[in-house]
Image (cartoon, rainbow over all chains, first blue to last red; front, side, top):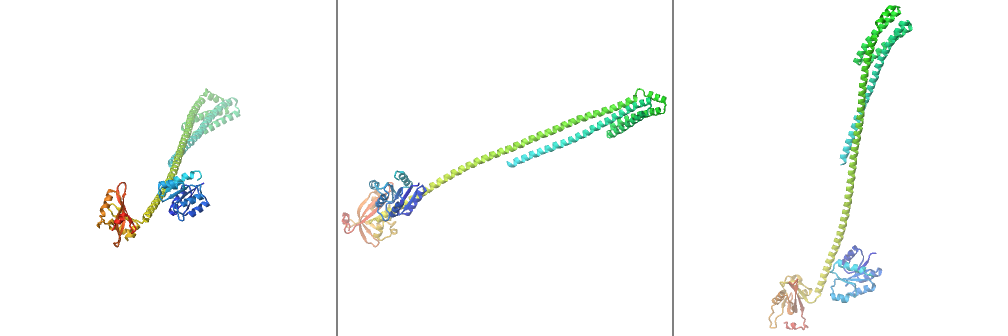
Length: 124
Length: 391
């Protein structure tokens, strides 16, 4: 059974790239553009992993993450954002809310490493 | 290879056929010779038999002659004359048989002559006895005492028989040699054909072995080719996958850079302070929208213009304008910042606005390549010390 990844990003090119990449490496992908669509997708088929941007239409920053976590509390969330955080802020604020923080300047291979690590972990 | 082998096999079979034909021709010829020899042997035996019959008839006539002389019986006379007639008939047959053999025919003519003389003698004695002339008969028989004439005839006949038997022996020897030659010819032909067949079989076997080797080599080559094709296909698939991944990585990196650049622009453009990026020669290379709004000049009108086109340091308290270029140039040269220096910004229409100028050198690997100048516009409510020094 292929692992299911939910990609939440308001940029279509980001969703398309991640969809092609993960499907090509053996995952099932559901890509949505908004928090509302993400919550609908989670209700229809809970994913094994969520990759989410921070700034979405209709949601404010970490509120997006908190809403998604409340919907599927046992599933890991990767925060993939173009907003660069200070490392100290990441450790103090973000890591309590997400399983992994990745800037969009990182490579796809780094994203894949995090996905593999988190989808193989118990509960994923 | 195929055509060469077929040519060789065909040549072998043609040679085999030629040998068979030669053997058959030789055998037929020898058979014909044997038949002829057999005819000749029969013929020779016939000559000998007829000659012996002549001898027997003559001896019988001689015996009957003496009997008739003693008995005077007419049956003996008739029998004697019949014997002479038989001898004459047998002699004619023998001569006919030897008409194509001059030597034998010559001997028979001699024998015939002697036999005729003997027959004449017998006829004479018979005639004398028949006429009752005993004295003549006695005289004639006395003259024939010892049987010399008959012995001479027998010697001639023995000689003829001996010659015929010698010829028979010679013909037997020739026939034997011919039979041997036929046998040798046949067996030699058979052996040669067997050798040729063996050669042809060896050629076919060699050709089949070569074909099997070629087929095996072809199969191995095909297998190797298949393996190479599969390996190459796998390599190409792997390379294609790698290229696809690299392509996705490049697209992702470009997108990330574009996103980051847009985000950085957004940050700078959102700042209400005037931001100008200067080259090392203090020419403007970039401005934020706040500069455009305050000066009324478009970025295209500002880029590549000296900073002094729109900004100068504020006048000193004594009323004189402070030199603008030198403190900034010196800061750049020293690689140090300027903080909150009083300055004046002049717009497109010549109107002046007071502001606080700060300068931050741009370093690239410890080398100053330009600077960022920010200008905080002073409003009437601004209560900073430097602002108080502005005119």
